Length: 253
Image 1 (cartoon, rainbow, N blue to C red):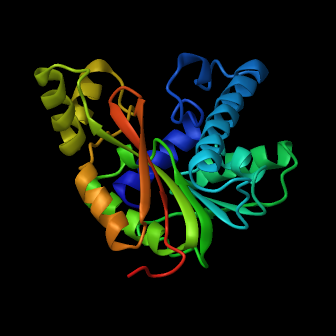
Image 2: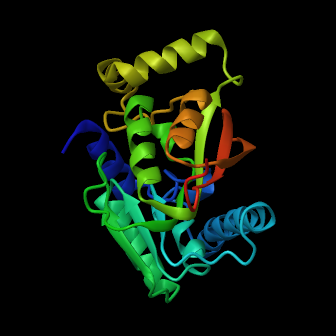
């Protein structure tokens, strides 16, 4: 198990809902039925907005036969996608997250959902998909690795299929000193371990955050026949962008 996988297994075991949405009410010591209802309601509302965007600008009455949610976590977004699709696959690096997601799909009585363990090569994902999706996930993946995963996701998108992928690209919220300190903690893990040791928090992991070059992402889409693309901006502690795109049904000359 590599360091990244170990980190997300830790979050999946100790704070699975808080690791998805970092509000105190979703911490394991605070979670209750009302908090869980609110947690999943945020996913339903988000997917409703995504579907509205797709149906207004890409494909009316959109209902994919096959969908994939990369970085599914506990199923916050995977489950609403399942209600609008014939079948959906949730992919995550953490077995603990997947265990929770499977339990949640059972609670909501959704039988068209499956979950698989993720890796950088998507080795357990097979076939093509009419809809590929990922939200507030790539921001935690080093861009060099993330771009390679994007290429694989776009590669399994069927002709005429639609993708919605989210990335952070700029951080205007923190001071230069804060940004430097965070990068040191993120890139030199021993410094963060030392900080935690001094503070008596030996098992506190840092959730990594990365910024992406939008130009490089657009190039990946263009080179893989995703001819139609639009951007919707987001704000989750850093400036982000949701890329909506559609793959060509046939080669245009």
